[in-house]
Length: 331
Ligand SMILES: NC(=O)c1ccc[n+]([C@@H]2O[C@H](COP(=O)([O-])OP(=O)(O)OC[C@H]3O[C@@H](n4cnc5c(N)ncnc54)[C@H](OP(=O)(O)O)[C@@H]3O)[C@@H](O)[C@H]2O)c1
Image 1 (cartoon, rainbow, N blue to C red):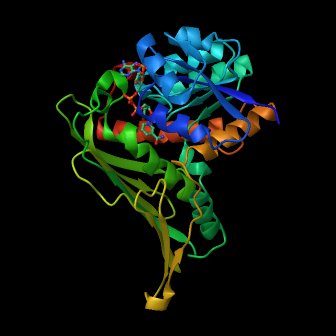
Image 2: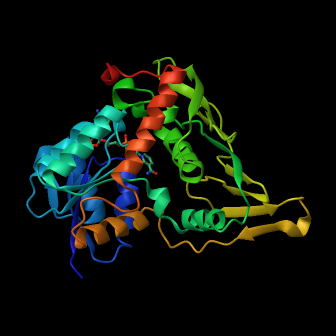
Image 3: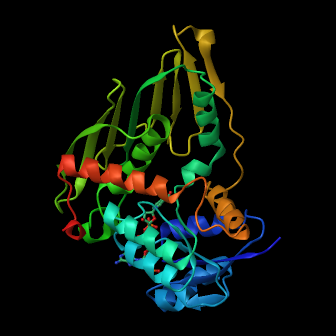
């Protein structure tokens, strides 16, 4: 099996979780990391036994031994960092939110196509066995025709609060940070909405502390999403159909339970679907997929395609337009 050599750009929190999950990926080797601060890169490299240590992102992108770079910087910088890596001919797996707006994502996709280099958004939930089980239940018609979804995601950031959560230039705000999962789930099970109505509560910095949105479909279906940094919520997704409903949660984006309830709500009509999770945080599934794509010489994932990412960010743009969530790069 061809070894896929990984580099990590930005040595922060999620980078640490991803690095520890790469150990569970057969044929993957974490050989390089890059930080704005050489000392930070050295500390990260020591933690994960990484041989190539770079004190700048440019140096990481120029490392000839690296096949693919995982971008783990704040999303306000993804556009810049993705372009940097693609222009050095590196395959890229970039954290969510993929970028701030549709224009940036379109430019990233265009560059990947121009360079003929692999690019994928790290929508890791889509690669988990949990997601596949829920999707199969729906496709098999277990709950009948879907008429609505309700998806919430809320947590109160613990001190010291990461500056990126509220900093407009880094893409702060609840919609881009966590709402991307709500939107992704609704799009997965219900498709593109015909109309979106959204409202937000501004934080002191102007980014959305909370955001609520309703998706309306011409055939009468409805979906509702809510994101907040002000309350700890169950963070569940409910998919409602004509025969029953599926409840994913807690943490619907990587749930520990999938409950299916058939109407009319008898006790024995409730099933809890067991999951067989592997050790790790759950990021290994997407990393495995990226390795497979690279071995097959693909420039785009058939599972999380460029079109999927463009639809996701377009929907986020529509929510932002309705709710009045603006960033400097929108101008
Ligand atoms: N998939 C998931 O489950 C998940 C979970 C959390 C976050 N995320 C996403 O991952 C990205 C990073 O989140 P995180 O929680 O890991 O953030 P974090 O802990 O703040 O780390 C971000 C890293 O980006 C680098 N960076 C470059 N320019 C920066 C700047 N101007 N300000 C701050 N950091 C800068 C820094 O690394 P150096 O100093 O080493 O250069 C920093 O350590 C975000 O896009 C977020 O949405 C995904």
